[in-house]
Image 1 (tube, one colour):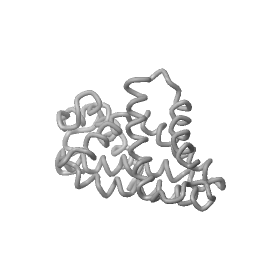
Image 2 (tube, one colour):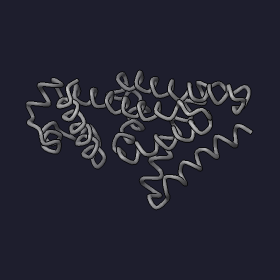
Image 3 (tube, one colour):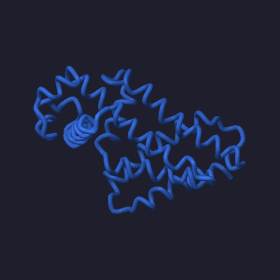
Image 4 (cartoon, one colour):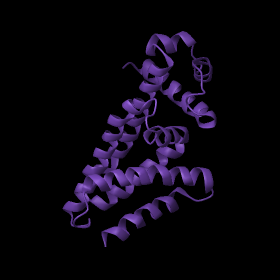
Length: 192
């Protein structure tokens, strides 16, 4: 993807997330998204074909951004430090894109959701990244015996989404570090 196309996609993603945060994704129009992003409406249709095409591409884009942020700290030699950095990276991402977090929560658990077929493999991507890190933690002997890594990774993803939204909506005065430490304390309590 060219730098110009990447910049346009980022503007569309950010515009959609800003608009969706206040009214929900279904209520936002292509006209509003294009205007908010500073592009012509035709640009949206040319690149994505429809609003649904735009939303699907933006969901993929957002999950890819989140996965990229989660992968960055995974190479830390200390698996627990890497896990802490991953939790922090997720909270930073969700604080930057709270609308995206709301969409993930609402669409992943809506049965059946309009974009559920798009989100299920994207969710799988994030769970695999978290599962890989938890496997490293287990390899260091710092993960409880008998807890399936897959289940723990899915639980961590759900916890991160819900805790981040709770923080941003109900407790915005708390620092990100406090929220991160609370999530890590939950993980540590189970590991003992």
